[in-house]
Length: 419
Ligand code: LLP
Image (tube, rainbow, N blue to C red; front, side, top):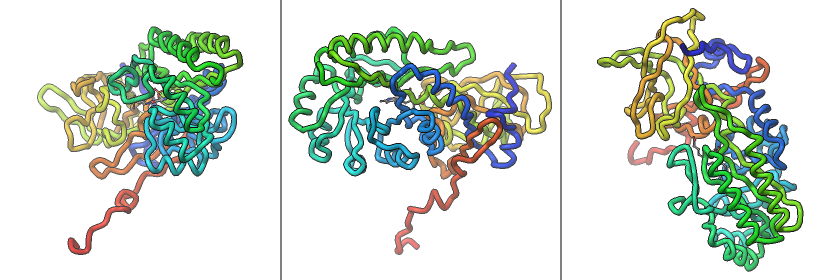
């Protein structure tokens, strides 16, 4: 029997739903604080803001002493507006990408942002628009790992990072371009396991040996998994840190001076902090199957449709009644597309979930939706982006208002001759 979840972040879900409408993402500040505290052994926690880049979440990270990664000019803009400054040791903002687009060139030049480069071409380009830049090399160690093929970022079929054999070439390019290559970074994918991790650590040590004394910082990348299913174990963070710390010590021995060890999680810091609250608007039967149709789809949470990702689902009865019976249902959204189903596996196979017997008007909570939830939302089917709310000790504050149709349509134009 599914847990009946009625409060999250100390707030009543039904009250919030009645006040703000659905769907909404509700974040629990205390969970984020706890996750940050768990990673404090690292010299720097660099938040991969692509997971959830709401300004309030970034401001919270800054208050907690977490620095930030940006993968676009827009993410640089967000970091600056949340109060981050690029300077410092560790730098407040680092730009990571495999290419510079025109907006990124402008933002990096203007704000003098350190760069984690993922392609050799970026080195000479950076030398032209920001000579003297601080640079780390994102290395593709030749293998990768991820929770889905789409989140594996290593190996020769991955577009990410500098191929490990090109390290010396890049150091030479850096010298010629007049940029300061002082670090190495490896992120092989999201959903790492320990076997792969120790291979990454070995690769890092090998790369450090080839780089020598100019190496001052190494980054473990992100990819720390979270238990999306109730029976999954939590990652052993101490073992994770020990593996990297051992690699760091070997690197320090090789280069002959202290080396900063950074970690770059997105999911780990925010995924579990968030409940996506939706409302059941229709319950129907199709042959042997029952459907709960809810007022948000893959426009709001794309992970199940995109990767077959699993999110726990709980019910909040709108009238507070006790529900004792459960049955197998498919949970689906409002979009005009058959893949708009929250209960599906990789490859788009629709499956059922045992959920409490609900009525139209009840609320469902999709758990662990803080990472790559709101951040990957879209306006598909011209649906408005959902409200985001930050809860802390029972105080709930809106941190993104529900979009309006004016917001969605403001940049569209009907040419005169079509009017
Ligand atoms: N660093 C780099 C260079 C990355 O590319 C990523 C994620 C991270 C750090 C953070 O990874 P995390 O700790 O969050 O696993 N949309 C997918 C995940 C895509 C990850 C992209 N890069 C999902 O919903 O699972």
